[in-house]
Length: 141
Image (cartoon, rainbow, N blue to C red; front, side):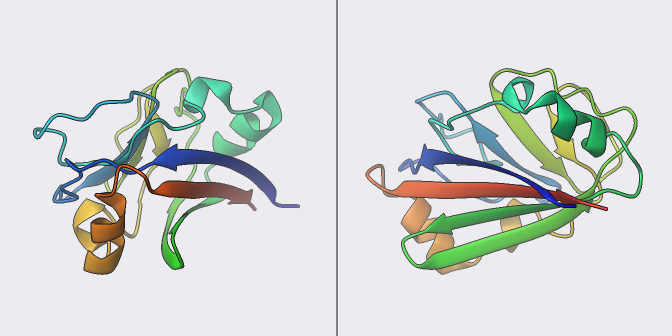
């Protein structure tokens, strides 16, 4: 049975989306020009806020995690996997990683997409500070 977590976030003029190994959401309101993996700000939750039942599912190897972002009528989707070492403890960030590195900020490992894979039209929309972004994360076995 799939579980879904949804929240809203905002765009920011400093979104670059040029990182080759990750993409990240943050609850922070500001974004410096150095944050090349951050794709949204003002996220409605960090990993710590994910329900415990979903955290347990994320800590299994065979759980597929789908990250879906919608801005305007544009959709970006990435898929990765869970891992027993996912901490889900960070109150601010969620990081999708192409690698297998895990820490309290890691949402999923083995992501099939990173910041550089986000279509240009989506990145342009995410540069609008008035953009309301819908995020859905689906966990399924």
